[in-house]
Amino acid sequence: MLYYSFDSLNNAVLTIKKAEESNSMKARTFLESTGIYHFPLFCYLKESGFEVFVFNPLITDSNKNSGIRKVKNDKTDSMRIAKTAYTHNLKVSLIPSDLVLNLRSLVREYYHLVDTKTGYANKLHKDLRLVFLSYCKVFFNLTGKTSILILTTYKTPNLILATPQSSTQRLL
View 1 (tube, rainbow, N blue to C red):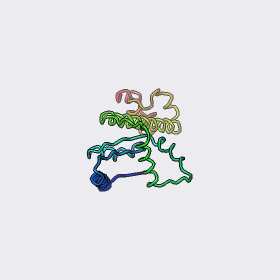
View 2 (view 1 turned 30 degrees about the vertical axis):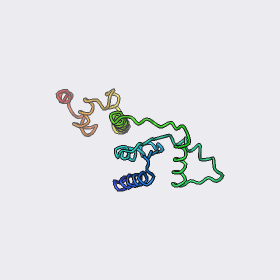
View 3 (view 1 turned 90 degrees about the vertical axis):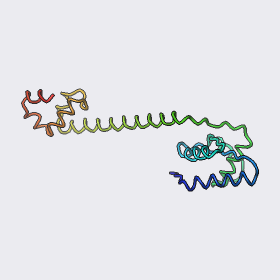
View 4 (view 1 turned 30 degrees about the horizontal axis):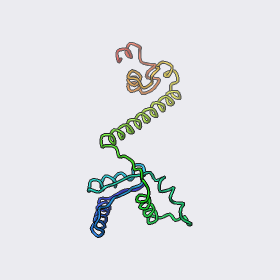
């Protein structure tokens, strides 16, 4: 997993600015899309005033086979990205607004929580089938308010069975 430190991001900006000054031209920065891992670098460079483009790594991958030898390292990858960026009519990715990105993150979190809740409900159902099989026949929704209230009030099947019906009804 790739992490960016403030120092490494700052060094990248300083290096690009030095290159701009020494070549007397404005830099255009190209990044391969790497899921979410390119995004901190993209944002930092954009906020630092650079023109930043993101493109699909399949584009550079298709250009990889142009040489005789297959070489894979950061230097050759950087050269391949630069050549691709300046020699092709490159289609870059559109970066969504912050609102859309935040919404995506919230939706992912929501589905993660729903999956977690389902996992706990399935575990409860499995455990109740082992410990108190007839409980599952009484309640359609084992995670409903009534079922959870009874399970938290009466810790064992024997306590539920030993409690008079009138006491259970008053509880509800």
